[in-house]
Image 1 (cartoon, helix red, strand yellow):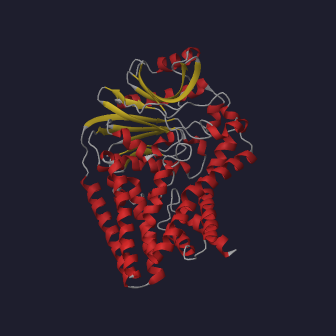
Image 2: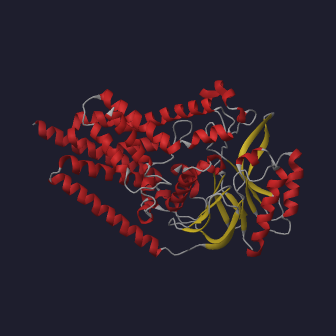
Image 3: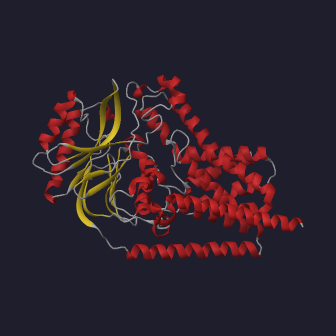
Length: 504
């Protein structure tokens, strides 16, 4: 019973370090319990402990998934809980159980020195979460437990959020090692960690303070409609369009260079003939604005004698003509499509009946005059590698999203923080337009230059700079992965040498 309680607490403590709780360093207690349980040379005990810890973390971090499925997804409570349970099991196994299993066998080989490999093993499974399962779910990587300390978050411009994850887990290792052994080596290790942390903080502070805007200056307007999801689902087309027209006319006096609306903002398909009347109604309403628009829209295409539905970001010129569009590549499993193994259970997802989105194929930059926009729709902003892989071509990152699905939960705050770190990683302004919030303008060092509070209707106008220059992370992403791998191998070799020396 004690082990069960500790595993629940372990998952809870780690979860409490993320937005919008952000309780500083409490995750260390969670990892301490995991490491302490690894002292037992009992694989079964460690499997159970890590599995429950992962479930606990999932419940406290992602409980809003049930709300989204049942309240807005027209899924029964039982089905919603069942789906969330399956998700939690998969998440726990991929991150927590896999981590502990590897650490367990490393401990058998290297005894107490195994603990120094923990940061490498942990971020390896974080890497995998960018791609597995169902296209990846790198939500709440450990780096986000430190990202609220903005000077420290500057480390992500070099090593990505994975550098922050490494720093985070290393802190837990340092505390565990010191409290468990209390010898000269443990004192040196924790002292060194504190010194390195202070050095990173100092360097990050200098980076933030020395930041000066550069590049071509532009003015952007961001619109936050704050339209409840149930209202969107009732498809009150004219009411929704009128709300956006009202907000757009408010920003006219600021003479912005571009106006940005959220994901799925307007209730019409721009290329679908039967919706022409709504498209015309909207653009008749803004014809005096004479500005380009970037709008999140569901988009219908007729391809190979089949109708395909895409979640798109569409760039319109000042006359309402389509310049370019981007189709979302990273779709939300069970939210926008049913993954292949679960197709047989498609009746559990009535809200997707005839509404299964198709994934886009091209990482396409949206170009209009001097703008080279890196488009990120919804949770595409949580994928570090995905964003860096095509941010090099752009000079501005735009994230449009509809977080109304999450309700009043930590999810919108978690989502926002992950998007903020993408600005630091890639060294570009990130403009975020969210239906219910949080909409914001974020500069390349992660400072929020303006924002609209969550669940408020409004607009935001601000200056941004179009930056083509790249950070170390965005330029050498694969090299960073290789660096972590080589460092892991070097540590293994060092431990092997020590192991053989002790045997002789």
